[in-house]
Length: 261
Image 1 (spheres, one colour):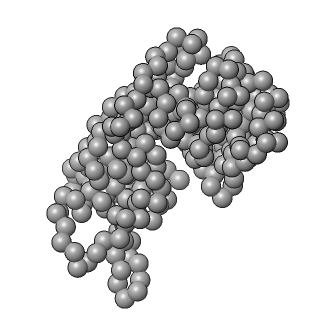
Image 2: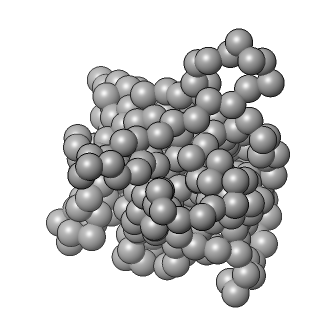
């Protein structure tokens, strides 16, 4: 199968590496601009030396870029943690469809930072493979797996769990997706939740004069303990003092687990 791949982050790198080990051909690759890229060099290294065409992922609505992608005659598009909304014109270029791997248990936590909101709002956590439609994380579900959120999880450790489970979910279901025999389960669009990237700003500032339920405050701080993000803070004399939380069953354990640059 001729595939157009859109990826970012460690999980995007690992899925691309796995696809490259099989019989499918990666004919096109969309990457984030360098300022927004994570593992971009590693992702590019997987196709370096091949005939794969690389495009700027921020320009997928440009007519000339769409024309270039159409010329690749890719049958399928695979999106892994890609941070740009895909247009109908882009999706329609691929006769076998376009799928996305989202680190949330859809319909909960559509959009950004699902690992944060599963801790702060105690919504179910998980990973979902779904078809891409004109909405944001609203397409038909192919497969998903719920992931338990432990009381010691931070935003960072939960995210790493979601990455690992997402990779396994993709490997498990790709043969059926490729063969066109996978599930198509419509999402209940009036259920679940949606968050924009900027929504975390509403919880990041800890008001020193405000009363919090202890559990809620702990959940905010641990959810925003997620390198490289700065996370929760309080103001003191005009300065922002940032907070990180280490949680462990072992009183001698001090390091922050699950963080990867």
